[in-house]
Length: 315
Image 1 (cartoon, helix red, strand yellow):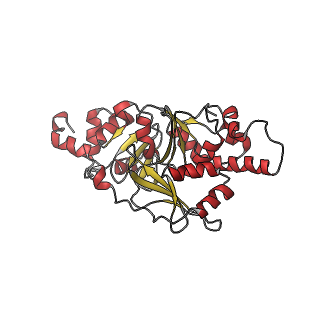
Image 2 (spheres, rainbow, N blue to C red; image 1 turned 90 degrees about the vertical axis):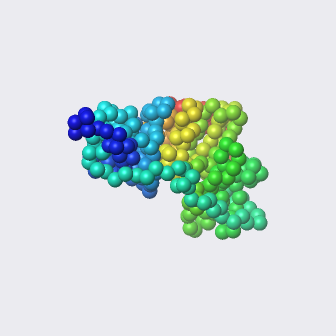
Image 3 (tube, rainbow, N blue to C red; image 1 turned 30 degrees about the vertical axis):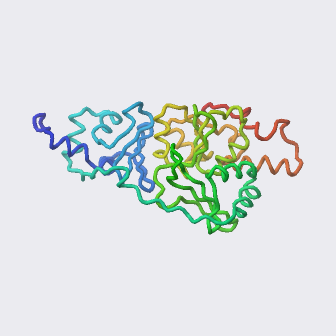
């Protein structure tokens, strides 16, 4: 394609080219989970297969993401403008219609609230060993309730306090259930402590609560604790863009370690490795059960164990 043939029509076609289709058909190593395509080897590059939005955690400022396919290839992949246009438009990849977030968002439908929280309290406090004080505070703040099926519903709110989604956790010991409310988009369950200058990221609300219970309360002042309800990098990109320090408190397993590395987050798994547990709730249960059995434990209070044994250093 000659330079003079790169006209405005081709540029527009290239901008709207289907990025997921481009990476999959061009030989890039990719992994897809639901509506998110991870392009490996580029510092945490993800493409939403529905909206065509791309995001790269290793980039900075305005180069982190957007819906312009050309920018993705020039800013992240390293192609020059002409080559990017040629590859995107010249191969006739399908174009993606640009829509606003409001158009893509389904109407939120929250589970119906039950009259009490008996099952939620029993499950979280007895089975998961979470302090009744923490459960009560979340309920008081409108961040947790029990639905008619007995599930625990962790409410997502935006910066203005508007409900925008929910994470759902089953409370049955015989049948495990995890999910999100219908219409929940790329939002998170979050607990704000003071004026956040750092953010701790979790795979579940239960791990978030467990961490909050064990952590040195002084050291987590001015923090934001968030649950993604899984490993969903797009859910935290707005927080990452704000410039605050991001710490990964996801599971101590292959997927969690990979997520932390791919998204350039500072790991907080040292104590999980030392104690031989997978996640923060496993650590909490292990600690509480030792106390309940009157076994010898550290002279520190349980909630202080984390901060002494787990520095924010990479392993």
